[in-house]
Length: 143
Image (cartoon, rainbow, N blue to C red):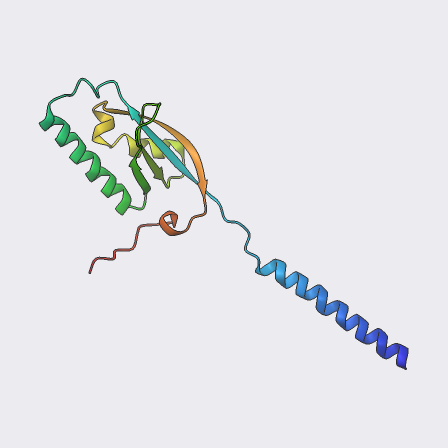
């Protein structure tokens, strides 16, 4: 009887340890990584050609309006300029699009790209879809 009780306690302890290990692997979140598209804006062939300050101001006002629109639509997740560099890199977009072609369609709506001030490269980029990179449109915090 004593051996049966010891065996029963031993089996119970083993099952508790085994279930605890299974539960801990279930509770550990698998890393969630999503593909985004990184757009590197580079100096274009018309950057030095378009010198009229009014024309450049109009183009860049459209550039910023376009970025704001894409952000509100949940497409543009991050954007900003590069500092001085040894490349022709001027700025960066991170876009939430299904395909490279979709990202390119949105980039081509930018007046600075259409004017030739910027050209671009598009490459896949991965991140966890949280914070600024959460799916969908940003929450409207203005009331």
